[in-house]
Length: 109
Length: 113
Image (cartoon, rainbow over all chains, first blue to last red):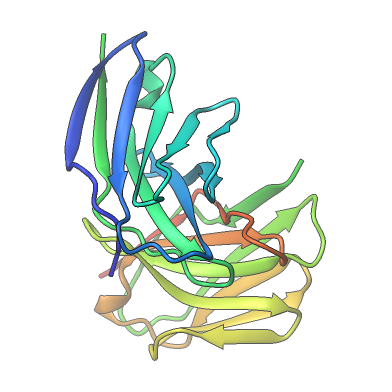
């Protein structure tokens, strides 16, 4: 079973930043936080991951709280193509990915 | 850059027929390879993973088997499909070391009639 908690859905205006929260209060010291998204009928797409420092790549930024019990994925300028289900996962090396319900993000024009 | 290919994209098979789904990875060597199944409206279930040629670990007992005949080729098979084998099958790869992420193919949607 997934160990993370995410809101089931959220809307975002096109061109605005989308901030997606995730609670992982039982995360262990050796577990990373991974974010994936899945567009309907496609395979999950890796977005970003981190341990305790904030991370940024060409897709998004990941902000992890100091106690590591929660994180926020930031899509800086949401586009209609960012409409998808976003999954937050905490996982140690070698362990399997376990996807929970995720957050269904709808980007509106 | 690395790419992962799965085929076919969709498949409709009668109950009791055999199955062979293929996955290949390009642009990397010695990857870990994975087969997942995603049932409608549910999360991913890891079926098999492999850390090398001929090395297969099964996560759940089932009607399916996996093989890795080459370093970058992973095959999911069944001798006789069941209705419960319907689902969205996903292949993924990752580098072997550390906490590097898994990268997924576009999946095969399998319907059993």
